[in-house]
Amino acid sequence: MVEKCHLVDLGYYGYPFSWCNQRDGRANVRERLDRALATHEWGTHFTYAFVTNIRVFGSDHSAIMLSLTQQRVSKGRCFRFDARWLTSEECAKIVADSWQTSCRDTLQFQLKNKITTCRQSLKNWSQRSQWNSQFKI
Image 1: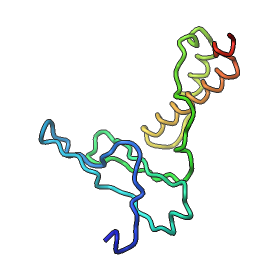
Image 2 (image 1 turned 60 degrees about the horizontal axis):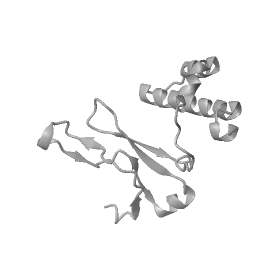
Image 3 (image 1 turned 120 degrees about the vertical axis):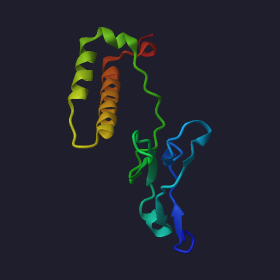
Image 4 (image 1 turned 30 degrees about the horizontal axis):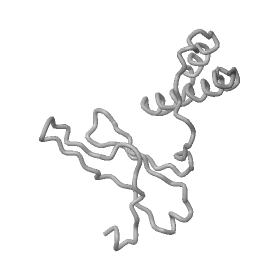
C-alpha cells in the first residue's frame, strides 16, 4: 500500500523500536511498527523534517515525534559538566533558575526541556566566564 500510494518512510532517530511485548528474556519481542510516511512532494517542502522515536515507559508503544526544523544537525562538542563549576555560586544559581522554568507539556518533555535549558545556560555562562583552561594557558 505504501508503494501504491507513492509514499516514502521518513526513517527515524533514537530508539530503533516502536513496540515491545514487555516480556522477559527470549519471549521479548520488539518491532518498529509505527512510522511516519510522506509523499515526495511533501519532502520537497519540508527538507529538514525528521522523526524521533521516544521511549515511553509504562506503555508497549514508543512515541514518534515529527520535527520540521533543522535542529537535529549538531556538529558541536558534547557537553560536559566541569566539576570546578561547583565552587561557583553563580553555577548553582544557573542550575536552580533552569529548573524553575515551567511549560505545559508531559512530564517527559518538561524534564527534557529543563535539561536542555540548564545545559545551554551552563555552556553560555562557561564561555562568558572563561573557565576554559586551554584559553587561559
